[in-house]
Length: 341
Image (cartoon, rainbow, N blue to C red; front, side, top):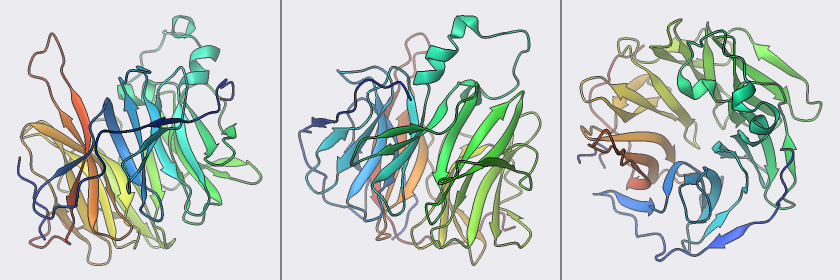
């Protein structure tokens, strides 16, 4: 497996659960991948601002089948379950300055709009992921207060904090259209961002506040173009000749790097890519013909890249998919750029 890196509100329970793993975090290797989380079906890992903890989702564990949020202490390997919900939880992220997280969950949508009661007159052309009804939640890691931020039927997810934590953005799917919404955390007033394209999603800002990036889907939802913008300058499309779906957009802590995952039609897998903002250079980081590589996140010290490794089962009748969180040492890649904008 070559790797090309060189170098709710109704929620009854508000407790956490300690899960002691068998081994602590392995020593970092700069020549091979190492496993960070292998229990359950685990994915979507992100570092906290200081780099000593990891937030992720995990499903199919002994205590639950739905995807729930966990936090891993990278010093001793201990895992703490954060959410206890009836629905699936996805895309958790840390607040840049406070002990709080964002995530989306289907728990309240399942109660308020049961699947059997949903109207089915109009078939949706949205990808299945955007058809899952979810809401966005703000969750305190200290007091464990949970605040529901959205409350309308349909998909509200992929929530992110702004670089200063004062604004929240998320993707909303309605009537076969996508849009990016923003909310002032204090006033709770929200609005649509109208300048991002026809079907924008997954908008995220760099930690220094200078850049923002997002994906813009075409009308058929077969292609997602990756855009980056510095301040009020015209946005640039990253690798425009690579016309494939793109997802999992994430800036590095020093704002110099943008990471994402991208579909490879030759291998039918998702692989990891990077983009150096100032030099406008895109490069492939992984090249795997069997497994998906998703959800890249670089540690604040810029030394470790974590990602989801999705092993695909060969038997179609009995899917055997193992989703694990791996890490690899990171050295800034070199070599030719792929499709510079």
